Length: 240
Image (cartoon, rainbow, N blue to C red; front, side):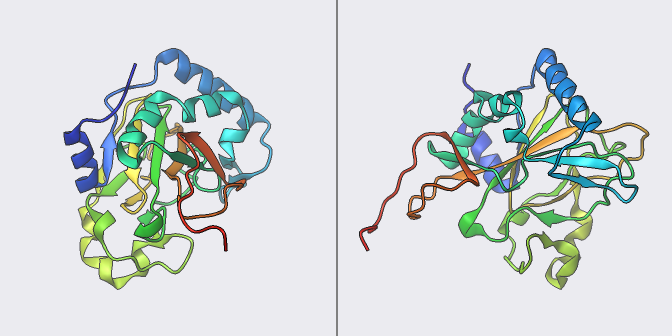
């Protein structure tokens, strides 16, 4: 089965900065992923992050931990829509996103931000929801169209509350509820945040980042880039 986007869907993504896939992971796949992730949280190994209570809430380097994750992140249900947006040559960014997050109420506070700093090396963030994501349990929220706003970041992320230029649109945030098995494609420059989980349960989700192959870079061997579709094109004057 193919999952390429239509022209209208591509246009919606370009305009809004996000797109909710109309396709869901099947129940068996969800259960297998959740079982593997449950094992990882019972005996966590670095790299991971802890909340203020000392509890592990995020486990990183997901794609290199088990074949089940690599199979998902390189599957057609994710790469076909990405090819519609990025072209035929796609890399997985090993050092960005690449994690699973429990999102309990005590894990992290909402804070609007971007996933990349500026448009010349943009990325697409993909979020796979293994549990239903609602306003009550902290679904992702986005300010549509903010991928076109100025690039002002000087740190590893661009947080809206650090820049006066963004203060007049902070209340334009829109929640994006998702079903279990849902997949969200998001421009790395669009302002977004995790929501506050007001329930006693988790809101389990996985994160990945992709970008097009950088054809003007002469460096093909890079442990932080994983070619997942197409080829490593290099175009330019590399003889000097």
